[in-house]
Image 1 (cartoon, rainbow, N blue to C red):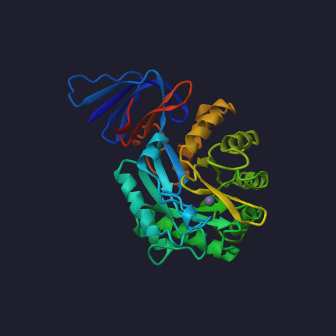
Image 2: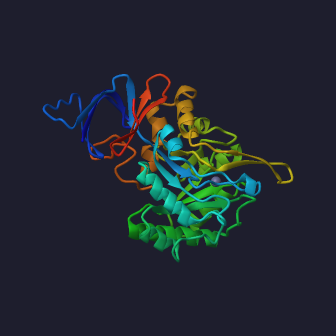
Amino acid sequence: MLKVLKNAELFAPEYLGKKDLLIASEKIVEISETITINGCKALEIVDAKNFILVPGFIDSHAHIIGGGGEGGFDSRIPEIDIAQIIESGVTTVVGCLGTDGFTRCLKSLVAKAKGLSKQGVNTKVFTGSYQVPVKTITDSIENDLILIDPVIGVGEIALADHRSSAPTINELSKIAAAARVGGMISGKCGIVNIHLGQGTHSIDMLLEVVNSSMIPVTQFLPTHANRSEQVFEQCVKFCHQGGYIDFTASTGSISASKALYLALKDGLNNKKLTFSSDAQGSLPVFDKNGKCISVTVASIKSLHSEFKNAVLKYDISLDNALRAITSNPATILGLQHTGKIALNHYADILLLDKDSLDICAVMSKGKWLKSI
Ligand code: ZN
């Protein structure tokens, strides 16, 4: 089946102008001023002249089997539904366990990932758990990466948080080393996704691992970097030293869009910054004694909302805002042939309204999941 999308304004994420796009099966096979195909019956032509065409969003941190539980068993968050992912324009999602790595398990996570992939959304997972020593599916992080297809890294591992297991530098170094070797052998990124808690020493811990081992700073993707002003400041320092940082779209005392604005203003590399949703994670509110007093649910929709805020409220260029949820996570997570509008890349595509940036159509690997 061939599809031609005509006359769309293309952002790859960089602006490519008004172009036609030819899609054959799962991939983009031609991008040019005008594409004309005659005499082909298996051809769908879509006039996209009223839309902006962008890569499908990549969400690098979502609790796809549900997170939470900090408020007791009745505060467990349900697993995500495919419709929520599609409505949010996400065509690639990475699932992880959360605070409760005891009653939730990695086998369920992998099964859910396989289910979502079958339903049309490319889904990967992180092995490991919030607490250390990390849970694994096989006997080791290395073997999980090497032998289990959807596993691309380890995380989220909690640091500087009252819910963490207070891992030591030595424990963190061993996790990062295992992820690195497992990633090298399997040809995957082997990234270590770090949950940054309220404490301000977590970035210092990561830098100590880097300084005391030969592990590069890019082995880590710390998330919740916009949790507080203090954590944000630490993350700016980390990024200036070459590290990646991820802003959580669903929460944080600084919004993800504002954090991106401040980071770019500070001169941070626009290829090192990402947004993720923390979808289906719990957003617990603790009183001054550390007692959980309420729990709300983080939504995958926040990724798109914060992208819109970045452009419409903070005047960040469309390509820079897109990078945080398309090409940057694709590169950091080692995801091949996605996150960009380019030849031989998967046709993971969104059509957005030119003014509101609302999502009008979603295509994943050449198939419409939501059509205009
Ligand atoms: Zn977290």
